Length: 434
Image (cartoon, rainbow, N blue to C red; front, side, top):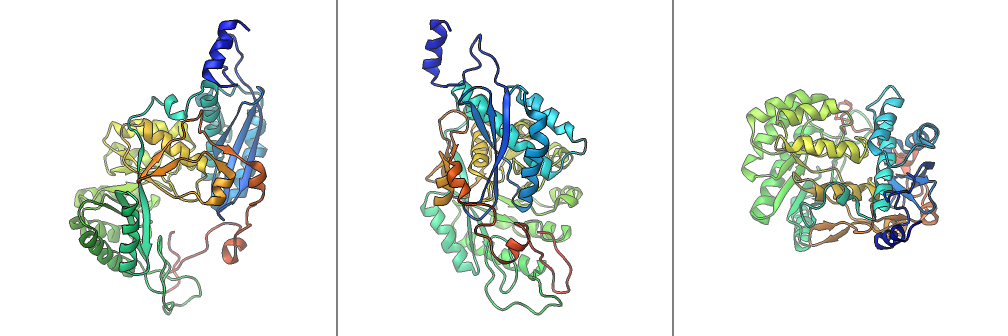
């Protein structure tokens, strides 16, 4: 190797500088899944190794409710398809994998594909000696404004929870309240279970809507005008109820109302847009362009918030962000606890590099998660800051990951269903969406 090339390698500080002249492109040597649950949620991380010593990458393939299926999809189907392929052709590999199963746009394939896609972006960043957000065009902002999850079984508890986030510097807070004795989302519902014709958890949409409206009104009055309030319906009500609720909360000026309708009810967004000015966020269950394209193109929503691994990774997400920018729709990528730190790092990279960023959902990293994943994005004063190391800047301690296998903290119904969710029903026994 010429002296000038050696100097370039030293300056870049990256062992995998295949982008330098005269060096071969790395080939995919191995693809495997690190399956771990340090916080009790099943995380699947794809690791791609190349034929260049020390050059590898990590990607998030987490589909907690069907985690074992994703592991098999990666190791039994994508691995033999990918071995020997050039690791630097990210979009080409995405297209090839996407079409290789013939039947596509499903959550298992998309999450498996996402793990591969994110790992290739990590490899590309390590090659270049740059964080991934630099590969996407560089920063549009210095850090990522986030919202925290406030909740409680009663209104005073919700307000106290929200204030704790505000004291930590958060300018956006999602507020959720439980319904006594009933199943809820984002908050507990203490109290006696209501009488019902079955033994499953009970949920009644009308009861929840009345209680949530009172909670949002109280939060706005007691927390003031400066904090941005968000609320998640979680797709649990009928379309007509959702439209009415979006109208009812208008006086309290939500930052956005999240997931008021289910993916099966997309057509009702046209009616919602005509009848209310409440900003709408949608998309965490989406896995097909047929779902998000009309909502963006017709300007029926204000925030697009897909789960990055559910939609297939960074490659499709960056294209959706660019498409949404043309229509004035902002991003608010899904960021719950059942996303690995690799997935959160991908969210942050997109947030920093996309002009039409709106807000980022934040879930803290526990001590056990940090034991497995070093280099997680850092939270300061309500902002997430990217790791400035190459790629995602995250390393996975595989020995620590092995200490927390799937099911290691699960109990009862969740363990019996192999990580999946149970059922929730109305009083008469009708199953509801979750």
